Image 1 (cartoon, rainbow, N blue to C red):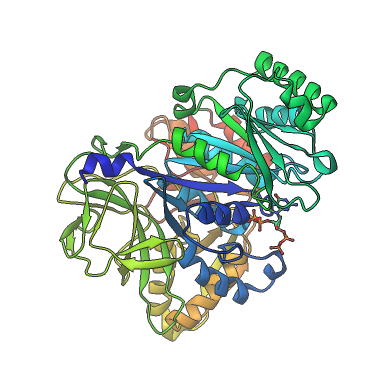
Image 2 (tube, protein in one colour; image 1 turned 30 degrees about the vertical axis):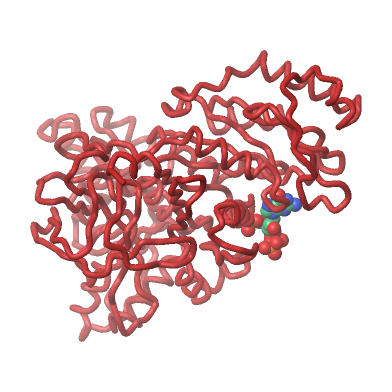
Length: 529
Ligand code: G4P
């Protein structure tokens, strides 16, 4: 098959949600439809169970499982679907943000009773920033929940998305009768008492058809007609360009657990979701159809076996074909590298592949050469942008607890930071090292891994920092910036790449500093050019 055809048949996307909204269940149902798994319950999710939040060893064990579910690929109606799994646990939010740099679209799962939750807001904000096309799936319609219009309002307001429903529920919870599919113009009836299956799908070309009254009852039919009229008046018609442009977002209703509305979601998804897209690099926009291979590392997973420090680097292919045993150019180090056993992912298995195409993810064994954000090419000197670090939420000084092992400690910290476990800052004033993390859990993970994988010991000391901001002066030579650097010298640090960072100890300090130094920009993300 030609490169063009291979690209056109690929859809690479992520499913995001607040924990417990149903991401794992939906993923599993999509795999069932794709025939990639045979029974429900087969997917050991990347999900970190709530009960395990205080037990990080258990979390590490579960993270091991997540290697297998990092990418779940399957074939459906002649298309190759790649689902990139994202951890729901908020302490691993940064992993999710990075995975979002490798998807071409997302499906957001929302619990009908809980509506838009905190984690959904954060993740959707990142998608909005990147203009990723979003489909919303409102889940758990078999339970009592919020009114459909209220939910649509909530999504528009809290997530700042303009939406258009492509399906609409008929009743809810105990009265849930089924779903009218605006996209396919049919009614899916929810199965009788067992509530486990779709009883039948009935084509209703015209909503005024009396057949509808016979199927769902006169009251439900007339309520549905009113609701659909309102939908028509209030929401724009679906427009694929607007969806691909990320200015209009279709909404589907269903119940992942009961397989309800899932096939409809998948069929609409394959009809509208984008194929692999061009990507901007430091020098130019690279198109998937170009013959020369290029790709970037968006995730690094450490091996769970402490005796072997090898890691798996996940590379998203942007252009051309990636071939086994072919030398590629590692742009940051300026070295050629060859991979004899690149892994591709199928449902829950990984296999060695000879050739992969744009949109695909390959897992490359790495002994410490890769860093998140690295670019591979066939020789071209360009780097993909767009894997920013976000301001951490927790900060601690890190000290060497075993002076005989300072080399090991340095190497360990270096590699863990390359993996993106946390961020390292060095204070300008005294060169002390500070670790910043998104979740409190990572401190324990770092300490444990330094000891078990690198034979080094560390201790922490508290540090009161509210946010780390990347600093951009309008003119590095002006007196305002010089004044800022003098007054705030105790709070200035460098990140790993040498960028200047300001540690604000409270929201108030941050606000005052912003007011006092209007010519300086304070960024909460490391990439701002
Ligand atoms: P997550 O990955 O987003 O965290 O959510 P997950 O799929 O694990 O689902 C969270 C809980 O919600 C699970 O129940 C799951 O069975 C349930 N669920 C998912 N979809 C639906 C639905 O359509 N209707 C209803 N009623 N429940 C749904 P649990 O009891 O927490 O876990 P489990 O023991 O069933 O795995």
